[in-house]
Image 1 (cartoon, rainbow, N blue to C red):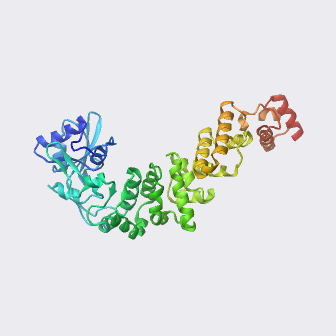
Image 2 (tube, rainbow, N blue to C red; image 1 turned 180 degrees about the vertical axis):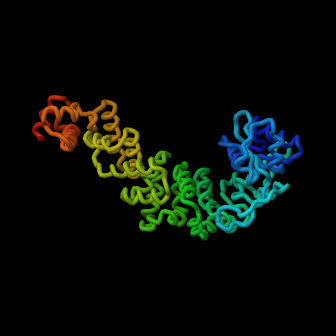
Image 3 (cartoon, rainbow, N blue to C red; image 1 turned 60 degrees about the vertical axis):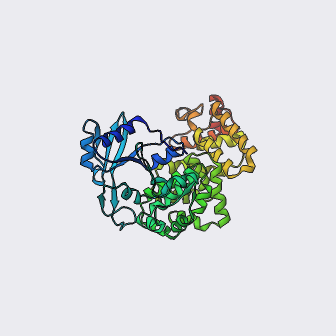
Length: 404
């Protein structure tokens, strides 16, 4: 962990502009945390004593966006990089367990840091003044701990989404959650019922796709059961096994979710996704992968059937999910993956569109008409996939006549 932050020029420019106009300004939050950890921040946020209209005046020569100005935030574009610059704030009461009923501006950075969620996100930095670390955030980063700013119970009552943010930060940063913070999260788990499912899913999927989320998922099983009550039907040891299996899968949301929900049938999974208002692509892909669990072999015929049900990319995802769920069966899964790759690269026939005969051929040879054409083509496909017929025009036409 470094004492002096390396800050990109565009962020230094923003701090300099505010400072030269007589205002206090600091980098704050996740960007300070990430740089202290040797990570490259996804974005840079600045907190300042300048009121929103004063910030706009300071950056009159730059492109600005006022979408968050009601809450004190002005987005400034410097060298093509968007910077959110927010006035020091004091949050009012939180009557809905999510957002403050009111926001007032302050001239003190201490007020702004006091309203933040976790100590690791409550560090401000200015190149001239150094760090403003009132809650031991640097020490908690060093010790890899997620701890609430101030009283954990109050923090989670203010905004219960912070419960899932604690889970997500712990999984993403590979940190432990401080005992009182974890206890308060469990105590207030029921407050998650007040949070929109869209926000819940966003935090949840980020946790699921973190480096090694298994331990944290299991630690937060009570919280997860609030929005996925289906997990309450599993024995504790089974639940533990499911959550820890996620660690063995690559960090792909389709694969991770297929592993996480492998203990349920696809219809149950579909209902879970609908409740969480998951995007249709994720719902469709994960359910298709789970439906392929009916294929238990690893031979070329099984590989073809899987490619009939899934795209090549999702067929490989199926193998990845199976490998995570059944690590003792690695040899068979590798064989299946090899056969899937071979069938795909060899352009083997796995769907009706690849058959050497088509609907017009069936019709023109007076073999069938109407809906019966589709039935015959599907039967021909089954013969080809199972190796009972070659995918050649004459062979399939003769087979079609026999099917008639």
